[in-house]
Amino acid sequence: QVLLVESGGGAVQVGASLRLSCIASGRSLRWYNMAWFRQAPGKEREFVASIRWNDAFTYVKDFAKGRFAISRDDTKNIVFLQMNNLKPEDTAVYYCAARIGSEYEHWGQGTRVTVSA
Image (cartoon, rainbow, N blue to C red):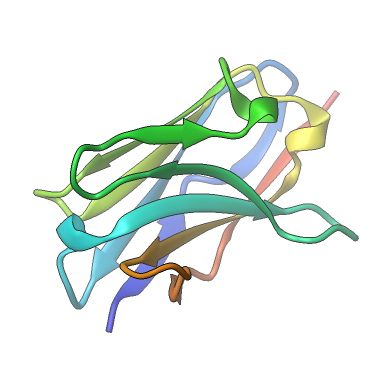
């Protein structure tokens, strides 16, 4: 079983940066594809970015390209989401997720990000 714990969220102003962290325990993340999702108030959860286990290939949704970057350090069992130039529409709870198969099977509890103008 993989336990994921996110941190790094907070309340910031437009244009600020935050780095979210996702620390895993229970198993090594090195075999897992990792991702960040978010859920804004009143909206469905949406995919933000992912990073592959074998070659660290990353994929970032269009709304985050040029502003967000996902990275991982398997030696420390941690995944990051660097978020720059934050906008009010980035306000959401951000979740870390892990998968080996086709579905994300392990989720963290989320960390809240609030961006105000």
